[in-house]
Image 1 (cartoon, helix red, strand yellow):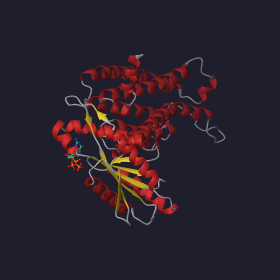
Image 2 (cartoon, protein in one colour):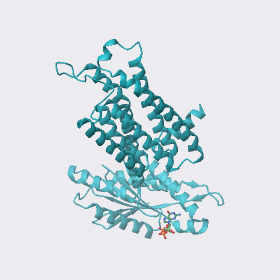
Image 3 (cartoon, helix red, strand yellow):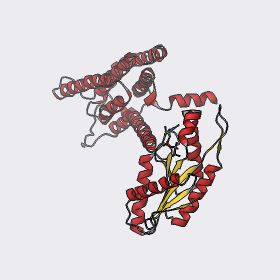
Image 4 (tube, helix red, strand yellow):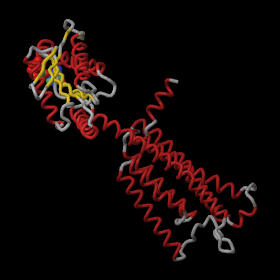
Length: 395
Ligand SMILES: Nc1nc2c(ncn2[C@@H]2O[C@H](COP(=O)(O)OP(=O)(O)OP(=O)(O)O)[C@@H](O)[C@H]2O)c(=O)[nH]1
């Protein structure tokens, strides 16, 4: 069970596989495709095939083609085994990629000649294989394979139009006497196209979901403070701007708390930076736990935190600020190599209930001024900025 989980984790994302494993995957797919050709050819020659098939299948060519298929199948098995073996010793060697991509291109070119260079199966391979190839493999190997197969495709196509070689020699009577397309041809096309379409769809689905997942992870990282896991400055400021716009449009008051740890420098200087970091992590947890679920808490600067309280008047904001202050005061932080640390925080508060026209920047400025007053008033307290009477202080 554990082994299966390890295997799944290791192999669930082809984009992260080594060059050797990716090449082995392509050779395995090539082997499946040739086995499919092989089974089809032998079935047409067998007594189980309906007699009517002889009208549509060129049995003479298939007899000849069969020998080529046997060789291709043997070669496919050998190359697959060789790369499986080599990838363990040289997992990132470009040789595997060149071998797999060129072999895929050349042998499928032969298949395209047999079933028609202008058939849908060939079209799907020509259009789809480079897309998958460029995502998975070394670009030069894919370009080389693509150029070789395109050149071969043109040569065969022009060769057939000038009558130098037959078009789709394994089949005949592609059209019925009345001019309609034969059912046999149609079903043969579906049969040969199916594996390529399935692989392309599964691959596109997988790659796109991985990209979306990575995009989400990167976006999340760009908005998160790596130390505290709170919103970073950019993210909390954009929450503030959003809330400000909502408040202005709907005439609902909202509030800001600017929380700054007291004498934090002393903790760093006495117990070291890692101890200071631990204090910041614990502070972030306490602040997050002290406010409501739809409030925003972010790290605004070094030891300064910004709390945005939507739909909150002064009373509500003061109540929450007091809860934050008390929780910080009650926090005991255990750090190895130092006695338990206790901290306090000063809080500047601004609420826009008296004037919705105050800009977000101005609100921040007012909260900062209130915080400055809180520090001046002896710390571990809350100061509300009030335009009329400058600031009001409370503990
Ligand atoms: N450990 C740690 N320290 C930080 C980080 N960011 C800023 N600081 C430190 O935070 C301290 C802030 O010091 P001051 O601005 O003097 O503030 P204070 O010591 O808390 O004093 P008051 O705010 O006046 O109470 C500085 O020593 C910074 O180096 C961080 O990510 N980790």
